[in-house]
Length: 341
Ligand code: F6P
Image 1 (cartoon, rainbow, N blue to C red):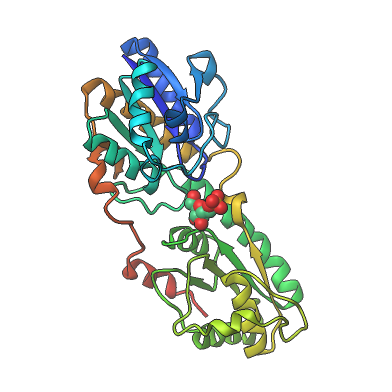
Image 2: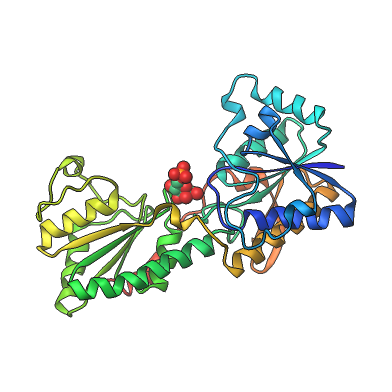
């Protein structure tokens, strides 16, 4: 059997550990050969390949990113894209594909499976918002990076008696904000699932300052205030004369300054949350996903995805995992609220 492997969507620490585990088990135990596809679905679409054998996966465990490259190419959005993939797989002698990706990449895998392509999925995203699995690898690394940033921001916030806002990734789900915020002792955590009241946020900020603490606010990039007045976002200068453009973190800083008279600063962590070496937990999870993915190929579990349930790795249908995103339960968020203000 010849197995193609690809990584799609935003990169994430642990991708290389999955690739390594697939090859390290697939070659000696099943006698498979592998072909790496470059840059997500663009690889099979344009027949962009990379050799993938035991020497190619040496030293990969601590390495961030993906040796195969990634992209957000969607073959279903390209005329004749799916047919090109079929032809290329045939020409390259590829019998099965392992697609490592998030909602979009695995959404493509789901559709390809439905038209008869032999596909196995492996979930990845630092956002942890994929259904069907308790956790995705990359999430733990991102949370630890954000937590370390929060730890560091506490001391500078206190020295300058400022409110500090940390904007973390999470367009649709607040998992990183919730976990990093709780671990880092944030005084307010704002997530996309629960629209916030800016007046309430300012009340918490003021009560924190009254206790002689500097408040730390962790906000997901996708968080939204209730009844947001868009015109506020277009103001050129804040109460301190600074020009503030950009996302929700900057908007919050400007609002807090204007409403409380206290200085506020924003740190946008951005892609630093996705880069660099994976934590031990992410290497462990990614490795187990890789091992189970190649076992699934051997069994012919097409259209299935590896998933973590408790401490077990199981298989779930791709169609189920890609149906809707896994968002933060309000009850879980309520636990963090105990520490607000
Ligand atoms: O990987 C998911 C994610 O990290 C989101 O949280 C974020 O909005 C997005 O990727 C950013 O992606 P890009 O690399 O395209 O800027």
